[in-house]
Length: 127
Image 1 (cartoon, rainbow, N blue to C red):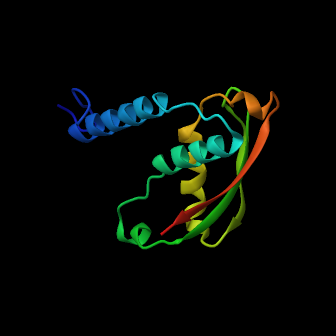
Image 2: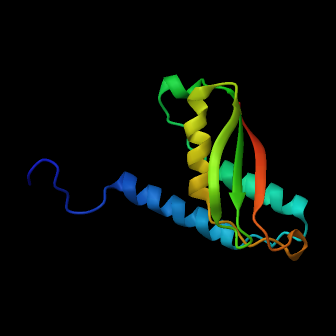
């Protein structure tokens, strides 16, 4: 076998795929939020599930807070963003933005939130 050619996915790739499928199933079974407040926390918790911090020592010790803004459609799709509004550690910005993108789409808005795009602003703390 030549370098760079593989017969199939490696053990690490299989484990990563299984973890992604498990997260997807868990989010699909989420009880629908009935208020805008419940929906906000559903979105935030889902984003937190998708934050992946590299295991190298440089990233393991990083701490701080990133304030993000993004827009969702009533169907739960990411319409615009995310963008960083504030950051106490710019090394964390990319991880927070990637988590928002990976976590979307979200479930549809509850009926109480209306039928227009909504802007979400949230703090993501890395501790």
